[in-house]
Image 1: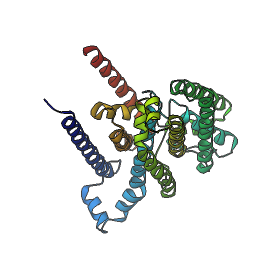
Image 2: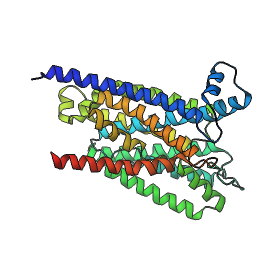
Image 3: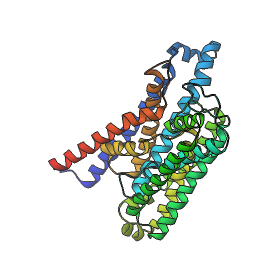
Image 4: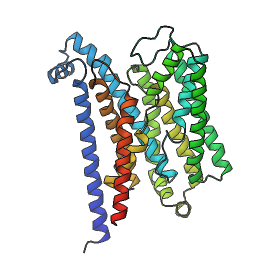
Length: 355
């Protein structure tokens, strides 16, 4: 009969092995994504690039087009997945995510306000252009500001409800509905070019990012991710119950508010740059739990790595399925994420029935 210590050691070895597989899968996905696209790039071209012998055309395609997009997918997928995993832990609700809490809809409303009232919409939109605005940074700042506004409202509701995690999800759904209705009103009064810009922005897209924008995202996401992972044991205590958390010296209310603030800022930054990309923060943590359970020590980091790989795969599909037409990645994540989440729910229900 196996002892508790032996079972614990086996579980940790299994989780470390899973982390290694996920990391290897992520790097393999990056390598494949470098070579896939409307223009054929072979392994030799990538090798010559790193050896300093690549042609000008290969440098233009790989360095100026594919590498920024790959980096954007990694940062955005990482941020959404780690935020979703933390939200689900501290709110003790499997439906918690940046999307269900209304952060994404608030950002979309903020972007639409900038497009309609900020005078940044292009007068002659081009077919297939996702961000048809003359000054995308105004849109980004406005989207970020309204995301923080949604967070402020959530914090007020939390204070009024004594930080009850179960009602926070309901509050998030209400906030999401309000901003969704407001977005519809903005679309109703928008001109044709403004409406096209709003719709394309809400699709979610990675193609219009540049290296300066990536630096901003990286500078925000990295320290927040380190802080979230550093507090993993506090989140694990909250996941076991508020009374247990208090018994070991963790303040659940303060930790929950701090976690929500950090995850919202992390999400707001990437959403304000890339638009609404749904299901990453909701699906990926559920998928990871199927393999390693609710062990927050591994769940948080594994969710971040898998979220980065998942979004990169979706973006690669967006670039290659109908090449040379490039689809917005938000369409692919919704098409893949929604059925995948349904399968996870059905499998979970089937497992509960069998047990």
